[in-house]
Length: 279
Image (cartoon, rainbow, N blue to C red; front, side):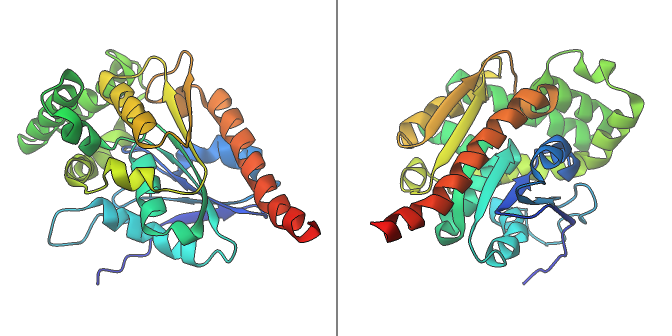
C-alpha cells in the first residue's frame, strides 16, 4: 500500500469540517472560509497529490479518484463524531466519492460544481457538454506532451475562468499554476474513468448541498442537471453571476452560503438527538 503524508492544516474548535480544493489550486483556496468559521468549527484543509505541500502521486499506475480520497480517509476515521465535507470542482468529486465510500463518517456534504465527468459520458458522450470537456483535456494534454507547459496552463485557466483570464493573472499566480500542471492531467484521467454512478449518488443518505454557478461552462452546467436527477433528495441551488471558479472569484458570497449550510447542519446534528431523548 502506498503511504504518503499529505499536507493538512487544522484550525479552530468544534464540529469537524474537511475542505477539499479544486485542481490547480491548494488548501489556501479555503482561507476565507477558514477565517470565517474557525471560531465555531474545527477546519481541516488538505492538499491533494502534487498540490501545495503534498508530494506528487508516487504510484506506478495512473492516479484514481480513490487515491486522493485515500489521502483524506484518515481524517474521517480520526473524527469521533463524523465530519462535514466541503469540496470545489475536483475536490467536490472527491467529497462525493468519500461520502459514497464512508457514509458512516460523513454527516453532510457541500459541493460547488463537482466535476464528475463520468456522469456526462454515461449520459451521452456525444453531447456537446461532454465533447467540450474532452476537447479541453486533449488540448492541455497535447501541450504538456510537447513541452509547452505554460500554454497548457493558459488553456486550463481560460477554459474554466474565461478567455483572457491567464493574461490578466499576476506572474506569481501563473508560476504557481504552471508548477501544478503535471498533476492536472492525472485529475482529468481519474475523473474520466471513475466508477461513481448516478445510482450510487442517489443512495447517499446524508444531507447534500449542490451549488452551481449561473455563468458556468456547458459541461459543469450539465453535471449540475444530472446531479438533480441523481439526488432529488439533495438541496440544489444556482448562484447568480458566478462561473466555475465562484469560490475564488466570488469568495464572499460562496463562503456565506457554505457557512449558513454548515451552521444549519451542525445545529441539526446537535439538537436532533436531544429532541429524541426528550420525547
